[in-house]
Length: 108
Image 1: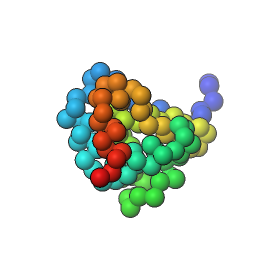
Image 2: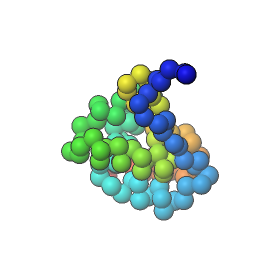
Image 3: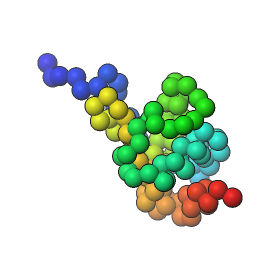
Image 4: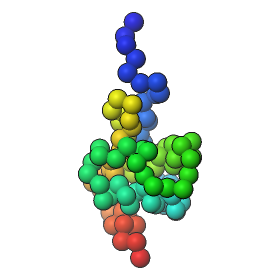
């Protein structure tokens, strides 16, 4: 039997070709998810674990928000030991929805 490396299933990521602009906008409309995206935009790829974000939600709700961001093609996650780390799919998202992420990250 192969050794288990994680107690949870690997994250499932959206194919950006399958994501509609409505799905992307719905994911970005939530204030917590918007905060997560903005914080990721200011961080190096794979440098932020899920628990490192200062958001006013519990662990289960945070998992839900990250799942919504993955489903919208905004975030990619991978497990590194006990931590799940994140990166903003900036280039891929920009190719699919030119200019949208830049508008969201402006913050005004």
